[in-house]
Structure formats: C-alpha cells, structure tokens
Image (cartoon, rainbow, N blue to C red; front, side, top):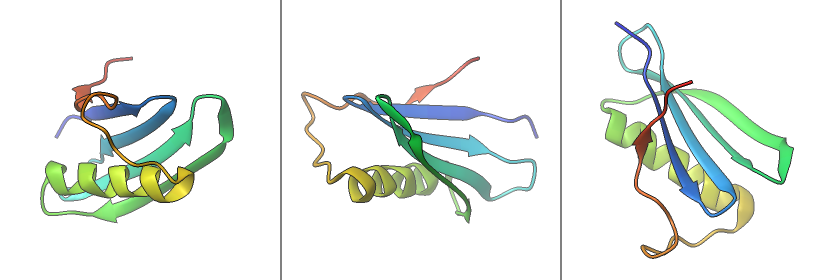
Amino acid sequence: MSVSIWRRFHGDIVAHVRSLSEAGRYEIAAWHGQQPERLQRFTQHCSTVDSAKAHADALARRMFGHHCDIGFCTDWMVWTA
C-alpha cells in the first residue's frame, strides 16, 4: 500500500491525514500555521479515510476553538510533497 496524504485548511489551521502501511491506520494531525509548535499528532484506527478526515477536522476544531464555515474552509486535498 502506498502512503497517501490529505490536508484541509481552516484558514491558518491545518487538518492532516496520512495513511500508514498497515491497513486501517492513519496519522491524524492538526496545527496552526502561525504556531507550528502547537502541533498535535496521533495514530488512529479508522474504517475509512473519510472517518480519519472527520477525526482530523474534530481535532482542529477542538485544539483551536474553530467553527467550520463552507465559505472559509477548503475541501480536503491530496497533498504532494
């Protein structure tokens, strides 16, 4: 299985999902672009990548008190280095 990365931007807040080599395991992370030292990352078992994305969005909202707005937050994008 190849590693895939997805990111969604909530203004300066980044929600991040990276697939891991073990099926059903994802790295979930969130950070603020102006405060990268506040990065929080963990590994999560999820049945689908959409579930992993939902966990990353929830982490971003919880960490920074963010409320999503369709006109402000981007869609999830495949991220290439």
